Amino acid sequence: MTFPWAKRYQPKHPLMRWLDERLPIPRFVFGATGAGYPVPRNLNYFWNFGVLNGAALALQIVTGIVLAMHYTATTATAFASVEHIMRDVNFGWFIRYAHMNGASLFFVSIYIHMFRGLYYGSYKAPREMVWMLGLVILLLLMATAFLGYVLPWGQMSFWGAKVITGLFGAIPLVGEPIQTWLLGGYAPDQATLNRFFALHYLLPFVIAGVAILHVWAIHIPGSNNPLGIDVRSPQDTVPFHPYYTAKDGFSVGVALTLFSVLLFFYPNALGHPDNYVPANPLSTPAHIVPEWYFWPFYAILRAFTVDFILPAKLWGVLAMFSSILLLFFLPWLDTSRVRSGNYRPLFRKFYWFGLVPCVLVLGYCGGAPAEEPWVMISQAATIYYFAHFLIILPLIAKFEKPLDLPNSITASVLGHR
Image (tube, rainbow, N blue to C red):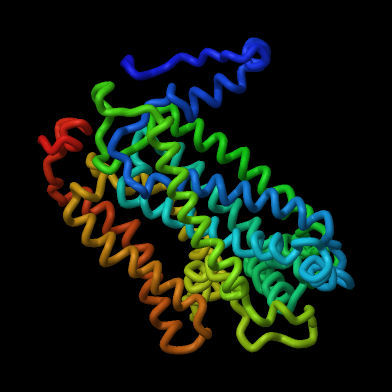
């Protein structure tokens, strides 16, 4: 298929011509994000969160490198070094708050990006690899965020590390050796802080590498679109630049404006006050809770309270990890030939009135104390979460009657069927 608007990369500056002949990075960037890359012309603003993910990752890497220049990974000085960054380093408070709240920006963006993919069927063929690489990014991001939360060595950092690594101890036979290997001992200590700092510094660059593979995988079949139909003619597309670079730029500008409000006026709103107290192994916090972006998974973990064949703790660990791992099989669990939820009336109802409220309820229960009625509510939400993907979604695909799809993207944009 030829695109009449497509332009061939032709560098004008002698230096760029010399570079392009020997190392064609400019040509690669132009083909991936420039006027040479065709994009469906009907993408809405939900497609802008992919670029926002990249901006959030860049923010975390840059601020993280600066913070690493002043942080000391020892149990005696880690907490004090964070205070030193906040009080004595030029603009250290700004860099630290940007990094701390940047993690929340990244998770908000990636969660919306995922729910967009779930609604519009972006996990369906031929984009299965795009979806699975996105899930790998999510898992790496969760690991990076957990490791980073331990580094300030406050009360919640210490006890969070103890509780989360203790989950591995529930695995029969190999659990305790794995836990000891992760901590570098039998409790969070100097060895724990050393290896957590090293891994926290390394993993963002691994995420960047997987993100490149993610974008590369998108370019093979092309981007999905709100209609969920394939590009059928050159008129169905527009060049990525300038149309979507301008749209992405506007969205990133709005997101960073809202982020700035959080950063300058409510920098500690998403943090836990106990983490501003130095770690004390002899004083357990009244309510140990992870960061907000882990709350849904924490609720699933705590939903299991009865031993049945296996210990309840082990059931919770298996369910928590399975809640993400089952998403890798989503392309084969949902067998409907229609991608977009806009043309699947039954799927749309279960999505908006089932899955989305379920995840929100799990998130609220994960941040609530481990007592009734929150435990019972999290148990009901956990049952629905797994039932939605393993039972409801396959049944919907089998019995649902989808609406008629438009003839083409162009026809839909112009208001014709």
